[in-house]
Length: 160
Image (cartoon, rainbow, N blue to C red; front, side, top):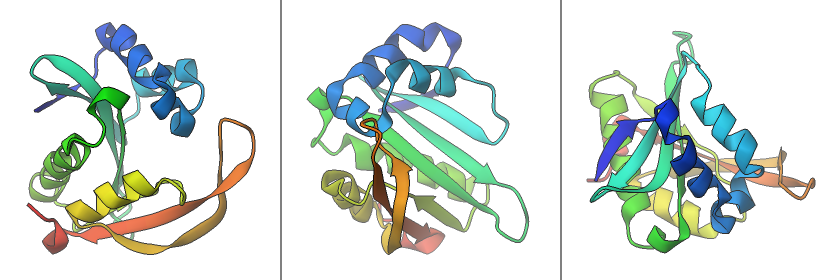
């Protein structure tokens, strides 16, 4: 597995990723997700998850730089054929290790939909712990609000 920075030339690959119905369920409009991923943002970094030359998903990190609240967050999407194979936790582990060891973060967060059980289990395998439910946190692709689960992990909780 390799995490490589997203480039403009990845537009078609990103469209494939975000158009996968199992990804679009959580991310919404594929065109908007592709545009957001390709947009310049100094606090966010986006990577293609490449397994043996195949783009299986996208993972991103964002960093809060205010010294009082400094931490990083992670979000991920994996195309359906590669879900349930341990690739999500592996990609999160790789990015988390980078954010801890090279960027100096002591705490990471992730905020899946509270009913996204598979994602929550994957995040727990890496070391994330449930902090609490954020009620009516996110508007889903169907236009209704749903709860989010705030999860975090301290640097020494990362499981290899």
